[in-house]
Length: 63
Image (cartoon, rainbow, N blue to C red; front, side):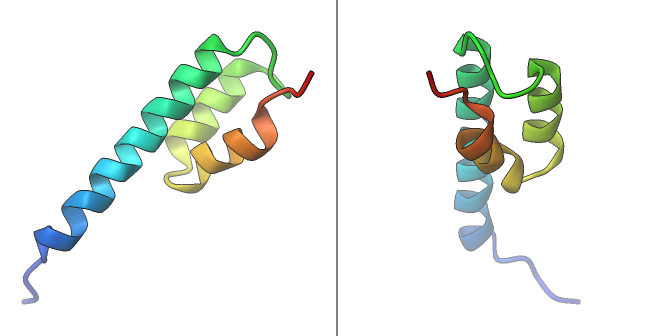
């Protein structure tokens, strides 16, 4: 059985958690988003790495 190399995986997990937290906090503080906020919460949480990235690219409403 293959052993997991935690020295490589741990920083990736930490970066992913930071990205999700930053996207959620930004979504909460954002007055208006492109689409309902509940939808962006689900996208950020459920679509792993790409959810927060999609939010930062498409979700924020530019005024």
